[in-house]
Image (cartoon, rainbow, N blue to C red):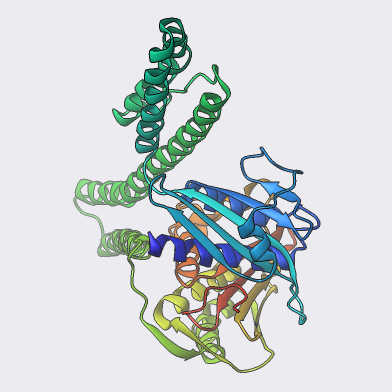
Length: 438
């Protein structure tokens, strides 16, 4: 449990930094922070409260207490700069409060993130609740048979429905929803379970879509090679040049198949929760210069100018191979989806905690409705153009996984027909949590 609490604190501090930079506590209007809160809520089965310095809850991921005042000891301690966490072994509940520091030199506290999460399966929690209710029913039965009968019908029956619904999901039912009727506590539990089921369905659908995409991408080169081979077999007296042309086409399809397989293997490696990073101190300026030098021939062939802006030299604790791959993927995309006589500007900078890499191009841009999907595996905004430019549709998914492994963030801004800007933020020291330290 201690390891999970540490991970939650690290993610909470990263979100706190984003809240500070976007003034989220005073103006709850940031899609990026909302997405980070939703992701953390789903990942850790958590409920997250954002509290301002007056103790008012400005954000509740469960939407129950928003606008109300909270006066818990942990929140008050966090407002004084004390990070606190509490874990109840009996209930499996962990309660963590982290201060939000102002994004300026005075490092004042502007709010608190309070994270409550359940360590254990929903079924175990349900069993615990049923035990409590069973005790209540037993005590009521000793007072009056009528009360026991009422409690049995009002409480036990809905919980039995809840248990059967959970069992049906365990047995493989995806679309089963629990009816949110009965007493208040049951409705809350049923609502939480239904939200969990919706998340599970989204994950299952994404997994099925990914498998289908993998199958399609791997079958396409194979089908092309089969057609080319059959065409060669049907030509009895074809000139050598024709055979050579067909063989070159087959080699190209083999190369594409190999590229897809290699990208899939890379994605599997960086997706593993226990994936290891070979951390070393690396000069980031030299790393980016090396990537640009390697990609410059591609840029020149497409008439794209590569520009590098470095505000100061610095080093960071990163996995050089993986970070090189992530930066290479973004810059190569900026070149491929650019206009002739366009440009790609790569800016690198650092403060006392993070380094920043910004890749801005003058390319075709991304329509607003597709921006949230560009990091999905195999997703392409313009499939026809993507086929012409090559690639497997896995580059940005790999890049995002690598940045997250480094405890960093990647953000995207794009406007159709004007260009796209990617911004990467990664801690200079891999051991730091990403938030303000005491």
